Image: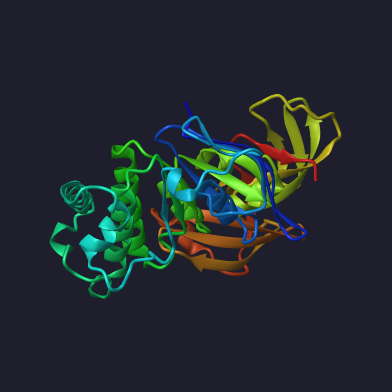
Length: 349
């Protein structure tokens, strides 16, 4: 049984369609990250699952139980969903223990204490039970928000950009900790972020959204290496495009020479295509006879990015600085470029 199934979900704000017949399935103990540009419908989808969004059509099931369709709309508090917000939403006048116990009021006091003690231990804040939110760091406040959601023992966890207010070191430390907590607690999660890096670190799968639809879903590696469209390719990382022409069933002709494909080319001979090249898939070599010219060099620590003008086109090339070979390039150097062997991805436009 899946933790979450969404079928044909649509949502309108006045005349603006925010979700467009969207389908999504989340497995048990799986974490899916919703990525996409601002306004593509990520947070609206999260609110729809939580029961906080009006003007919907379609169907939502949580653990096999319908919570929304054209005949019913289960109240948010009855959906067994935990929601972690970007701003933590802690009550300033309540201490840590009271914040975590807030949603547990129907339970006996002894059961409340048992659950609060257990989740505070999980997030390593047992000694902070009597402190107030203003006495905690941003990372500690976020842990309390997580603890409060865990104490509710939800069937599904929803996270709306919960790490965006934290600095880089704290953010990724917390991402790894929360991922481990969700996995250890056998919880499923739907996670919204604007940061690809957060999605890569936190989620099992990436669901990339565009204009209210999921345009591709899969592992981060699959979306990066085998995008279904140029939109996906460009969103997932820096892209170069090389115009190629099908030479035969296993090769393309291009400005960078004949490129041999590892797989059978499905396009007809002579077809003109755009070949996707990631910056790390191009090799650069110094050459007095080279027709490429180095335009810009950006040192970024473990690697550097070199922009090369070649036959009127600019190419971004990424090279590791580990062995120092690429550190000898200078602006205006003449170079040659070579496409490294990889699984080619081409687009028709």
